[in-house]
Image 1 (cartoon, one colour):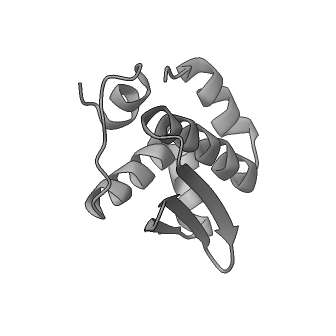
Image 2 (cartoon, rainbow, N blue to C red):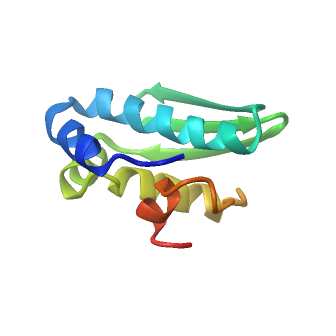
Image 3 (tube, rainbow, N blue to C red):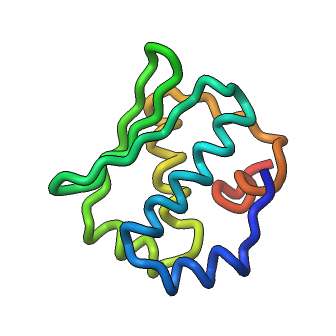
Length: 110
């Protein structure tokens, strides 16, 4: 998947926090589905946001407070993506590089 930094920068500055979270979730789901169509992303809002990635019986969860979401959204266009990907990787999700430049921009890896 390829990332459009200019567009993402504009959206990070002009979307509400919730809309930005959904936008990021859609991008992450798109990347995951390039690896395996069975991946699903769900975002739930309780006191905090719960970002859930499922692939069959395997489930990963990332919790993000409203204040952290606002901070990451303000910090840079891909800071929220980076936080989610690193948390998912820390829980055992294997990140597969080589599908466009999106993950290189987010994680700074090749």
